[in-house]
Image (tube, rainbow, N blue to C red; front, side, top):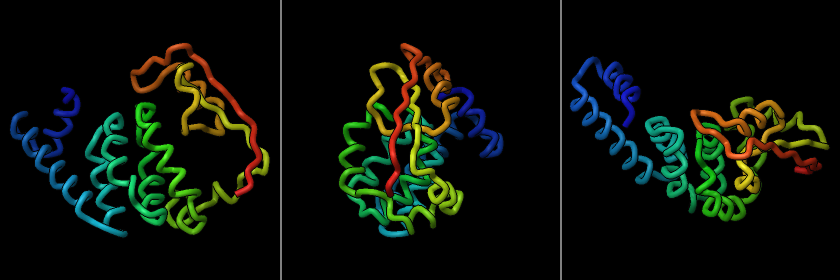
Amino acid sequence: MSTTKLRLIEAWIGGKTTAQARASWRHRLARARKAAHGTKGAAKIDAVGNLSLLVGSDERVAELIPLIENEPPEIFWPIFLGNWSMCDAAWQWQHRLIPILRRVGPCPGGVYVEHAEDGGQFWSELPDDLTLYRGCSRSHVEAISWTMDRGIAEGFARGHAARRAKGDCSYNVSCTHSF
């Protein structure tokens, strides 16, 4: 655990020692994992969201996959929509995530509208013809995270969150949206 994380934890707990803060954090994380694994339905959506906030962005996908891989679309999609944008280092999980996405199929419109931060406005305003961008290392081109903002892709191509991309490359694809 990083020194910065421990300092934040200590401040959050109220100035306990590092050992006390670490023990308290582990206890809270264990409770959140138990709740996320032990709940069903709408309660699971909230429990997984709570757990997601307790782990780092690099660790989040590893926590999420086992919790969502067998869920029906009406549970999978709210969890995915609420947490995916906070995940980093997801490339190593593509082999598990892509089959899950194929199984659950497209996000039902009503689920998206209910759980998207913008109430579905983004989805409803998509043009018929799109250009999507991906910034990544050359070996990571075929993956699920793409953006409509070229600047964001270029930022990922250069590296982000203290990660340097190898090859500094960005890709784009044009497609027609027919959802």
